Structures are given as structure tokens and as C-alpha cells.
Length: 366
Image (cartoon, rainbow, N blue to C red; front, side, top):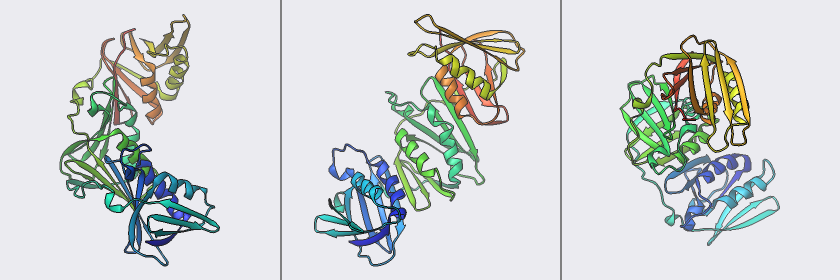
């Protein structure tokens, strides 16, 4: 195997592929990236057996077809260390790969490509085309609500639901819930799958700066997204997502509209003196006013008052201030609307100008 490529053309796709590779692996070949040369292109593949990322790059000049695997992190570090616009030449010599650029020369160990695992080729299922920024928007507006290491493993991921002209993303950790919809122009087969947390975060990175159309295929065991020269495949979480519709409060008796940024800043200031472990704050609602109070075990206290559009009956309710801040930091728009029932009911938070994304925050006992 032999080929040459410019550093700028290679580095970014290589970094995306290497990001999937786990640093500590029980199988040595899983620390490697698979390089395949043929049909005038270079294909690079990284996997951790749950996710697989393939990047394809066109090649010019002299090349010899072949395939091998080399250590992913070391190859990335070599690429980053070389000067901008440098040309890099790769050549397999027995069980070693020679990497040359200018006066630099590196010899990397290889493992046979035959040892490299690949995820199921067949990812047939519901398929649609969607703009990458729309898919990224769904993820960015909901990902913060995913659980991290919950024993209810199906919460450590994001639900994607295809239904009647829309794609919906839902995430919850049992204390809060985020839901966001994107309208689709074409009819699609109904599907409902859970993408694991790592897959969600890697997908968000890939979609970050691509203006092309993404092809999304939802299969029985896998989700595959093809965007530009990148093909991303992820195994799905085998579990049943909670019936999230049941925890979304129906219309609350108290509706509060506040300036989003003013409320966000007030909560951020009060949070400084909240209990570091429980992060609880008291919200006291009265006509035209929302008062936020926090105390901690050191008997310190913070208090803020925000003018709001509200003229219902008074209410005092406790919340985890971090959950409210996460929602307000994620929301767009200039205003935030909160719908609340009583002190034991969850609050519904959304942008009154766009209900594409809605958030549910459970109350706290203080």
C-alpha cells in the first residue's frame, strides 16, 4: 500500500475518525484506525464496537491499493505536529508503515486489516434526507437532559422518533426532560430508536460545520448517517424509552412570561450561594414578580427579584437551579414562558414564540 496526501486534507477527517476510538481497549486492533486505498480514494475507519466512523478522501498521484491498521492517536499526533500544507507520503513495508514528510520520517507498527471488526453492513430501514444543521439543532437543544451513568441504561441516550411528518428528539434523566421537533417535507416510515450517549455527542461534532444534506437511515439495530464524505454508524440502545408524553404537564394554571436573559442572570447569581450538593432554590411567585431565594448550610443567603408578566394566585415552589439554568442557556429567543400548577407539579418551560422545543423540570422539596 502506498499513497500521498496533503496534511490539511487528511487531518480533520482523521481527527473525526480517531475521536470514536477508545484510548484503553481490550483488543489492540480497536486502538487502531483502518486505512484502505483503492478506486482512487483513501478510506479511514475507526470503531469501538458500538460506533463506527468512516471518512473517504480522494487521492491523486502515485498510489498502490492495499489495507492495514495503524495506531490512531499516534497518527493524529504526527499529522498535528507537521507543518501546514505539508505533503505526507505513506508506504507499508512488511509489518511497518513508513510515514514521510519533508525531512521527517516515522515508522509505525501495524496490525492486519483482517483483524479489524466492522459493524453490520446492512442498515436498511426508514430513510430520509435532512439538513445537518436541523439534526444538530435537535441534538443541541436536548442533549443536556440525557442521563450519564444511570442504571436505567435506556436513559443514557436520546430517543429519536419519526412520526407523521416530523422527527422528534427526546432526552430525560428522570428529573427533567427536553423535547424538540423538526418538521419534515416528505412522508416517512414511523420509527422509534434510542441512540447511545457517546453516539449522540460524536454525531453532534460531525454535523457541526457541514452544509450538505445528511442521509439518515434508522434500522432495527443501527442508525446510519451519511454526510459529505463521512459515514457514521451507531448501534442502538436495546430498551424501552419511558412514555414521555405522560410526564409533560398539560396546561398549567399559572403562566409566567419573563425576559429570558434577565431570568438566567438572576438564577446564575442566586446559584452562587445555593447548597453545593442539592442546588435547590425557592421560587416565590406573586403578581408581576418572581422572587428567587437560595440558602446553604453556612447560613448564607442570596435573593433576586425579577419583573414578570403574571397575574395569577401566589405560589412557592423549589427547583434545582442547575436544571433551570441548563434550559435557559439552551433556549433561543428573548422570552421564556413557564407554566406551573402547584408546588408539587412539574414546570413546563418554552419559548412563547416557538414551541418546537419544550422542557419539563420537576420540583424539589426544600
